[in-house]
Length: 219
Image (cartoon, rainbow, N blue to C red; front, top):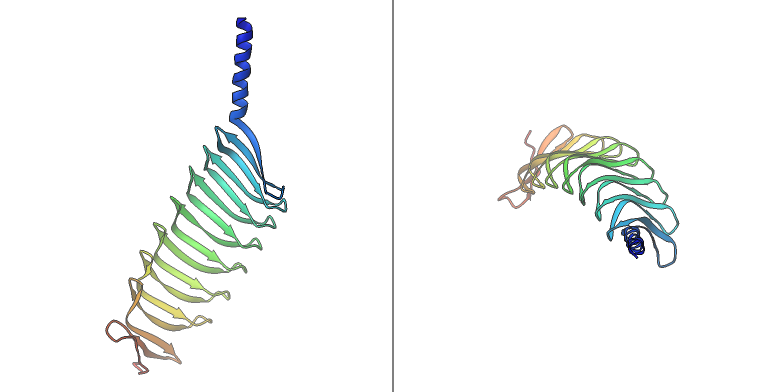
């Protein structure tokens, strides 16, 4: 009798263990496989792979107790890698890479607690740099440089708490200085200058001048 009881108890234990660690598959309403992975105690655990209806990979994710944890890789429908991120217990952390559909790097940078942090670099599809910008607490902070697809610098300036602040310069498509002026908390202030044919002209006056456009030569 005791042996039968122990046998029944063991069957119940292994049945619960099997239920607690199930390998499951999810499907689209149209019947195609949507994703597969492991469920432990009713939560996603370990590697999960999701698919587009076409059958191509959509993402490879890693979970810990139901939260994203570890490397996550996203794919375009063509299965070209779209992005690579690092997660820690449900929050984005550390370095991340994102790619254009042609496989070229689109942007790369760093996350801290799911917010942009530090230097981020953006690239055009032709591989040339598009923008270099710094972040703090998820907002632009400090210097930024903006380029066109030909590789010429077209803007440079600084941010403070996500708003333009201090001197900014704007260049023509072939990299020649065209305008300069200052911002304060995201608003243009003071005198803005235009540079043309070797001359410097007052282009706009702000803060009390109601953006009066002047065409007087100052040099």
